Image (cartoon, rainbow, N blue to C red; front, top):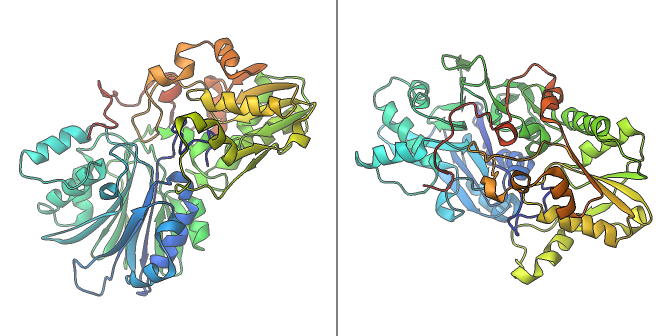
Length: 476
């Protein structure tokens, strides 16, 4: 779900990661269902993916796994899924925010230790991963990856040696972790989910007959025909096994800080995040934009995909006709041959093309979810004008990015953010728009009902925890 059409030109925001776990109490294999669930979460990461499974009735420590660079349908086929025999498993789709994009960093991680096996998938970023890693290295730990997920796995394994249960070990580990993490862990006989006390990243519980599901978003539950049970609370640990759902809320936080950008951009429109419809949030964002930044125009269009729903909201509020101005090529995956620097322009056009008949001779309102560096926005505005649009008025369904994110969203450092060094009028001129309007940060709460605690540090600079003094996102 990219509105800054740029996986391969590295200019805009990237998704974080998607996690999914399943435990079939009837002993049925879960790999195929995890595959479909990951397919539904593909928008959260397109660099790599993996599935690891185990048989709860089989020998402890036996894990079968398949991982690879690429999209879900590129890494897996019917034959590879058939080989993954097991009724409990964990899956992951990844975009690297901390740690390089390489095969060694593909999740889920799985390890064997004296207490059995551990499979783990993680969404988010730790701000103290480097410190924890160095402490463990000086006591003999040997790391195989450069991702903070391995720090979490080792910490849990070490704590497990001193505790009676896996969930108690997870709780002790969580007390040492700082930052964002929604994690799914499979111990030999349990599926466990945990969410950091701020609840930066979403995590939901589902059930299909006698099969439990944990996932980043409700759209993944829909994909595997599972019924939504509830959200995992910020700071909560849930244990799913033959005895049902057990919960530990010792670390729950009365003032969480859920990422507001889940509603603006990351989550799929058909998902619910902490009980809030993402679709309704984006409709509201568009309506607010129309109220705050009205303009005389002939048509409202969205930049696919996450700009589309906000554009519908703008059209509903303004009374201006909604239209489809862009054709997006959905078949351009990570195997797309990257053009040379001089051919970057064509790479945008290959992913996105303008329907000339829709915009020719018209004043266009173009709605997008964000402007990061501005280069892609400038190209899309130019494409609309080249196609015959007489005016292009850009409306952005989020406030200006002014600060980096350290919690799993790939918002770059300040010097790379166009809004940090330029006024709105200057940004408007740089992208070639006739006018530019952002969502007011004071009205962000209206997207989620007005009474939910959230994190908007990338816009406001108000971090829920003190940010690191150095950029730790690629420090490992």
